[in-house]
Length: 250
Image (cartoon, rainbow, N blue to C red; front, side, top):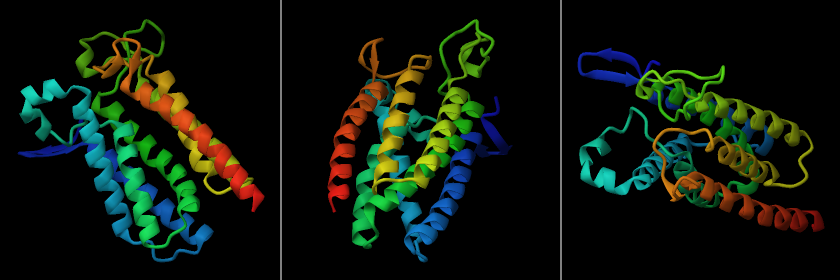
């Protein structure tokens, strides 16, 4: 693994942080291009992306701390290590969505069409971000004797599932599906809702392979991420039918 991309004196560029920045850059380029092509928005402000990045960073870190609140309360210095890893994707997602909707409404940007664009955008930044997890040696899986087993710095020479790579495959598959659906989209918001449901299914399945320290709602049975995924699937089904019926009647 290569957790540190560059280290000069006291200056360190972590591979995880580098991947997040690259992913954000690529995703922002795609978003601007799509907004211009599909919605006729030629002046999507960079502040839009700064806001998303900050909200995602804060939310991802906050949920990471909440997975083990007592541990971080007793070791507050660890909360200052903000760039070597330690983010919860759903924390970022849940934090970003309300702020994003507020921004879009404030600037009179169509909410549902933009969310459809951002669904694909999210798969881009998430895929590259998971590469950062792989190189950083975090978010690894449980011990395994299968041919996919790999060693990570914190697994003490024990082969484990490279769950980061599994998720990358899942994200690329979701991205491909979203592009196919985009060609025959039935209603605004459809791509966004399908993304949420598909990723929730993928994430819930991947949690079965995760071997790093996780937060659980039911110890050893239902993790925080699986619980959030379940809630999102149920919410998506409700909103999918509601939006579809509403827009097809117009």
